[in-house]
Length: 367
Image 1 (cartoon, rainbow, N blue to C red):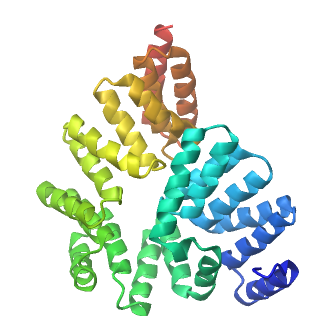
Image 2: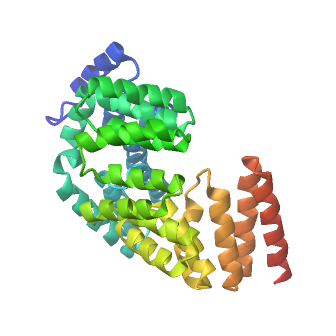
Image 3: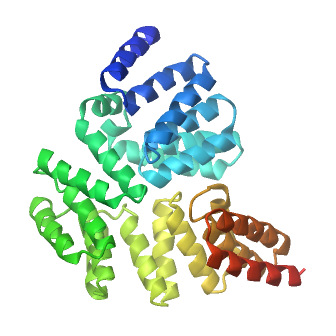
């Protein structure tokens, strides 16, 4: 590929596919060449096949964004790049593609923001942002495939299979804290606190200064009702890396849940400044601002969520609709709430759908 020998590269990659069968990195590399050659439809079909098998593979979503840009569809590229950043908010290539797409739509502020984020993450992790090294790493590290399988199982609600995959990773990578850190979160979600504590002990012995470790311990302590300990771990994670947004997001969510809206909003503002594409941070911040009766700002924060379809879209759109009602944007509110109700009905969320119906009655009465 680096020598411009595209046909030879495709032949070699297809041999790799014949040996392994399911090989996302090889499929994406072929798609990249096909896109460069102008075979956009073939490339899209190949990328869509990877996404169907590995829906949480950020590289596949980024490749989808690149193909959309190549096809002159910047709005489609924006959606795909945002999805990639929802999976990995530090993925430099997705920030680069998003900056290019925003530039083509005339959104200069968005383009500048993501160009700066691309530069930040390229400097933090130059190897992972180098296309050749990233490809080589993916082609040669079987552990990466195992990690992706575990994450896909977890995202698909197949917790037992995810735990099995992480347990296998512990055997192949006994010196890595990563599997333990993930298992803390998974056992915590299932309420198996005893198992989670065992993995905390192991992870602390292997990597006591891991940001993700302290963040996951904080979430676990919150589940256990140990609020002060949770705050201490979130703050420790933030001290270890002030540029990492998740501890700030978790602190913001904690304070909002405790009805300390001003402090919660302050933390969430800081988290969103670090990661402007984080969907959950944006939703929580908008909700907090609405609770503080800052409807205009809430609408500004929540509006970008209307273009990113997700399982939580019904709640996002409902909150946006409520903020628009409070801000006097009744027509927009009705449109947001109508789409929210459609999303809720599609997902069988009867209780949410009923709430949205009541919001629609309120909006129409305000016309």
